[in-house]
Length: 507
Ligand code: SF4
Image: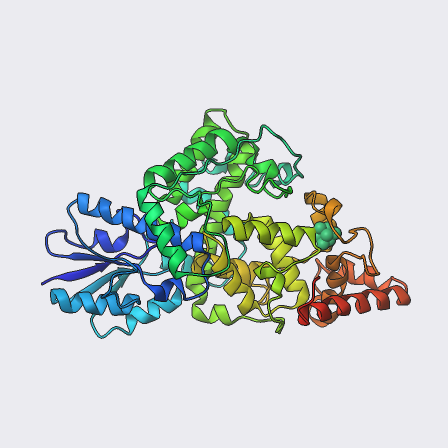
């Protein structure tokens, strides 16, 4: 009896669990491009194009390996336009008795599979370096799920950058050598652009015709198959990894990639695996080609942070998406969808998001995320925005980053304090402030940086929650020590900024 083997657009790995459990001789692989997924949130057109092109190429590779694949293109007349409808159509076509699926990375998709009127076997996605029970066991009984402890366990488990049972170089974390501001450098290597081939050209035309979401479709620069992804990895390791650590938190106008890897889209759709990218980085360090702080900083992002947020997503379930510990309810300001702004840092972060479907972690955390948190935007709307606009955003990785780390909407499960800052942090880590309509050194008045005004407004309105926080008490003492007239002017200025946001005026 035939079984259907579902392969989703972010499961493009030859040994993904559903394929491993299936039988080439009797089973049929189902892959489907559906509007229901493309429009579940307004995904960036480049993200949709990347996934569709990569799916088409992956299906060709499966057929070459002897799999029977039924593939529904987005414009096939019979396409039911949801994953469920396509599975039911194929089940009827083949008289299938069961669907085998790898656990999707979005709770909505899992629920839809579980509600199908045919038996569905959902297998754990074993492309992560721990199993779900292992993460639950790790989390059991811990008051705070600190990434740093998880990361150390992952180093021991994988053996990456270990010398016996001790970390290479005598330290687990070399961040004190990282996180420096960056300077413009004409010789800095930029990630290569992958020229669209015939498959990509066809997909781009389709996406252009069907979707009008925020974001530019062209130029489209992404690799769309495993060979391209491996080439992107190789190029990162040889050309940018040596400076990755020191530049990872910096922001420069017009230097959107700096020394970042820009391989997260390939990792997250399955074209690359977490261990192979870490081993490539470890090898470069062992060969003496990159400093220890660059290699350790990168590996921590992958086996530490990436694996950890997957665990949080698994552990906390769909309810995690509803978190709103600070009771924020403001609508997402129009600047997030590209409206005019005088804030140079926001203009740069949103502008490159529109053009490339990409911004690095500090732009996401300390510019757009920081501003949304300070302004009190509803975290569900912030979550939807990040899930929509970034080429590497899938719920399992995006939601803990946004709801937990960025918006403190989980009440402090991921972080012991909210990631908020005044304009001083952005000024230190970027060159944006010099070209801004606002003045980062001004604390009050019409030209005062909105981050400066909203920072204090945030602290004042959440005083009850945070005043006893040992990492924030000092800021409350600074506020209390200010002249009353100054404090009043700050709050009036912040209210004026919020009023402009609510009225849809330029900020
Ligand atoms: Fe951003 Fe403020 Fe600097 Fe302008 S002055 S770029 S708003 S931090």
